[in-house]
Every structure is written in C-alpha cells, then in structure tokens.
Length: 609
Ligand code: AGP
Image 1 (cartoon, rainbow, N blue to C red):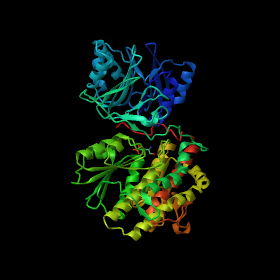
Image 2: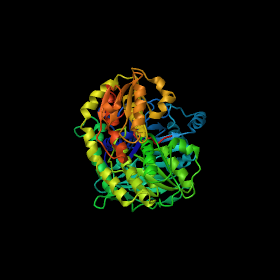
Image 3: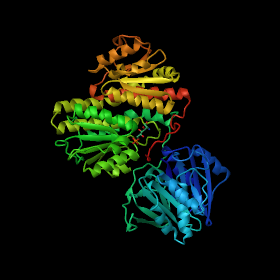
C-alpha cells in the first residue's frame, strides 16, 4: 500500500506535496517522489528511503510549478529503489499509483512490442505507457486515461498529469481509497489524496470516489465520471481529519506516546457508549437487532483480528450470541456460508485494509447486515457499513497498533453488554456491574503503565532472545497472540503464541533454558490450568515471564520475571493484560535499536492484497 497526493494550486506546490506525503507516510515509507509541471514541462525528484531523503533532495534541487503529484511507497513490485519510486513518466505523462496492476506483465510485453522502453521493475509503469500510447493515437488526455483504465486489472488509486496541460489532473479509483479536496479562498485549488488526512492542511471539504469512478480536475473544480463514463455527482462532506500534524509530545516514539494515551482515549471511547449516570450502555444508534440475530461473523487482520478473537469470547460469554471469527484474507476466499438474516462485523483501525474490505463486500452480497469498528470515520470500510462503531483513539501513527487495539476491545466489551441485554442474558444488575468494571479500566491501565521502568529492565533479557513463546488461555490467548505480533513487528525477533493447553501437543519440544516464555495469566477461572502448563515449562528450564495479578508464590515454580498487574473484573482482563505485552515489545525494540514507529517491510495500512 502506498500514499498518493496531487495538487492544482495557485502557487508552487512542491512543499505542500511533501507535507501531504508526511501525513501519508504511515501507508508506506521505503521511497518517495514528486513531479511538477512548470511552464508546460514536467520535472521530477525521487529518493530511496524515508521522506527525509526526498526533502533533502528537494532542498538541493528545488522544483517549481503550481501543479504536481506525489507518492510515498511500500514496494509491491520492484525493489524499494529510486528508479522504482513513483512518479513514473512516459512521453510527457506522469503517474502515481496505489494498488496492484495484476495484468502488468501482459500489458508490459504488449507495450514493449509497440516500442515502449521500460525503466523500472514496477507494475505502475505500464499505466504511464498505456496513457502515452493512447495520446499518440491523437486522443485527449481525458480520452487517453478513460480508455487506458479498461485495460487494467487489479486495484488502483491513481493521479496523472500531462506535459503542456498546466491546469489538468486526472484521477481514478478501483479498490484503493481516493479522496478529492475542494480548496477555498484560504487554500485555493483542487487536491487529491489517498485519504482526507493528507488533505487536512489544505481543506476539510472532501468527496470520495467510488470503485470505477474517474475524475477530471482543474483549478476550478472536479468533474466525476462513473465506470460507464457517465458524469455523476459524489457528495462533498466535511472531513473530521485533523489539520495539525500529530507530534510525539515528550515521547521518544509515537508508539510510546500512543501506549500512554490509552487511559485517555479509552475514557473517551467509553463515554461514547456508556451512560455513566444510569450505569448502562447506549447503542441506540444501531440499526441491527441482536435479539433475533442467529449469529455474528467477524473478519479482520493482524491486531484487529486479535481484538475480534477477544470479541468472540466476550460476545458469546456475556452476550449469548454465537460468533464466527476469521482472518479476513482467508474469509474472502473461503466464501463461507452465511446465516440468513445474519450480520458481519469488520474491525479495522485504518478502515482501508484490502482483505477486510473485500470480506465486507462478500458479506454484503450475502445480504448480511454490516457493522464496523473503525478508527477513521470516513474510511472505505465505514462508508460501506450499515452501522459504524467508532473507536475514539485519535490518529494512530505508530505502525504497531496499541491504543486503537484497546479501544477496539473497549467497544467490543460495551457491545457485548448491549447484545446480552438485547438477548435477555444480562439483567440490569449485571449490566451495571460490567459497566462499572469498564469504567475502572483507564485507572487500572495507568497502574500498569507505572511499572514501565520494571518492564523496560525485563525487556533487556528479551532483546537477547532468538525466539520467544507467548502462552495464554481464554481471553488471554488472543492477548498472547497480540503480544507475539507486537514483538515480531517492531523488534524483528521471532515470536509465537499458543493456547497454553496446546503446548503439550508439540510446541513444548521448543522449551529449553534459552527460550523466554511469556505467560499471560490473570487470576481468572482458567488460572490453575495455565499454571500447570507454566510448571511444565519451568520443569524444562524455560525462562518464564509471568504476567499476572496473582502472587509470585502462586506460580509454584521458578520465574525469570513477574510482571504484576492490578486485580480486575474477569470481563476486562484483556484490556489490562494488553498493556504489559505492548510495553515488553516496545522496550525490546528500543534495546534492539530498530525503527519502532516505522519498522522494516511494514506499513500502517495494508490496502493491497
Ligand atoms: C498491528 O500492529 C499491525 N500494524 C497490523 O497487523 C494491523 O493490525 C493490520 O494490518 C490491520 O490493520 P487495520 O486495523 O487498519 O485493518
């Protein structure tokens, strides 16, 4: 997934393009570039590596021009090099692209037969040559783009500018997000971007293209066409994206800041779903009737998937509703049989994850009611949903999700109470009890954050490890999985999570004195079972890091470390145990010296398959 931006302005745009790309870096950051049009001529600057490299390049070799496009890349086809960086150019046509052109190989050989010479290993370059070939057939830029789109298979959000056309930019969308920004007297001009966040410094008046749309922009406005090339209107809404560039405050990394924001953003999210005075939940905006719903399907990716697994436990145990949970990339191709009159829930921080969006569209075809839990209200998943439950985590910049995850858990817990009330399995007294347990969470998380220095010290031992095992039972199993993912994605240490009861079925062969084993074991009804698994590990020399509100003595075996968590209601243990596994991963990565906020090979929003 990548980020694209385009500006038709009334003053030089190079600096604004870079500013917009800074807000899109979460989508990919292995190379970047911009192209501008000045006095009818195209000029381009690109650089390998983070956006800083492009800024340095531009400081030395500035670009003029009031029209331009920009791109920040997460390589799909072709190594992350300067040559493969976008924008790509062919005979006066310049293109930036987010997505994957699946038939690029056949298009490339066809274009090469027509004499086009390729400079890159990318799929995107075929788009520039396709449009250039149509222009050679004496078509207008609009006709050239329109007729090229029909040759493309796969996903794209793209922007094109043309030599000799100082007041023209053409964009198109199929499967990847595309926002149009409308300038005003303060910021005259027209804008395009992968999302409204990129456009926030210039305008909050945005439209979103739908799949198949393409758009012709001039400095005066936009003309949108659908895939039948009929002129259509798309509504203009006021984006809630914040204009200020989020900063790290007094933290070393965005991830650290976002870990520490959790008490506040969970409180903010809770206040959206809970009536504190009445000690009850409020989901009156929901159109889905859970009373008669036969079952709920959940699909998500990565951390959001682990939130969904916790959600399954919560909604089945306290909501009395059967739940299926699937990794979205499996769900979309398994094409599961859906219950008549069922509903599907999609959990996604970005709201743009391609596999989750594709799964949503499958469920829509199966006449399921669609519910989503997202952190970006104007996202593609939100726009496709019947009901949207926002997490109020604020922009999450660190690629490793933390505050969005615990806000997802917060929404799922409140939803479980709502479902339980609707289905008559929770009475008012139980509702008050569970609501009170949720209200306690911000304070309890603050208590865990107070152990930060201890966890930093413990993480030194992890930073020496080659492999790490995480164990948990019940709702602690998805927390173990989340902890393993956090460690993998920011420290690059291999980590695996297992249901503690599964250890004896093979993984215990891995245990020796070199294997740190992180055991997530709140003193709940599965505690004793987990302890016996932990003792099997200790008996084989495993180095145990015990995350529990129980005493060290209750472990009944040697421990390398004990991370004490505060006692809490069983209903909210996942929210509390998530914090130590986040901190362990964070400090291990800090000791490893990796790029915590922008780890290698990753991007914040995976908008490609
Ligand atoms: C989590 O730390 C990772 N960044 C990744 O697994 C992420 O959770 C996944 O890509 C899903 O993203 P989404 O929530 O935006 O859909």
